[in-house]
Image 1 (cartoon, rainbow, N blue to C red):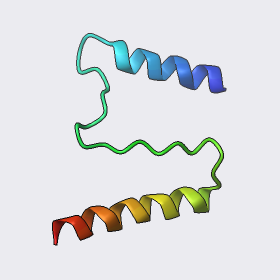
Image 2 (cartoon, helix red, strand yellow):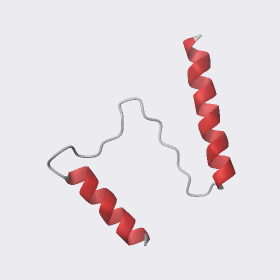
Image 3 (cartoon, rainbow, N blue to C red):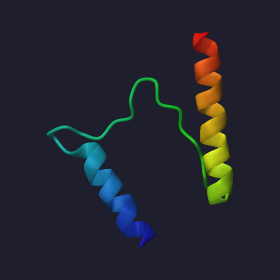
Image 4 (cartoon, helix red, strand yellow):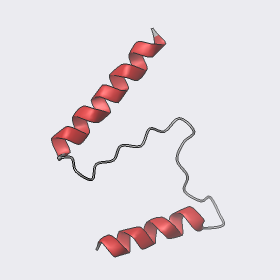
Length: 55
């Protein structure tokens, strides 16, 4: 299944029409060694930091 996902992602990134690319202001979150709850907390932390910077 992981190989299928990698292949799908590769196809999406390299297709000629509308290749999938991250937004210019995207913040990658490496969830390799995180639980679902930890990922959510990290995203919430990043959102809070972004909002605080706008004040």
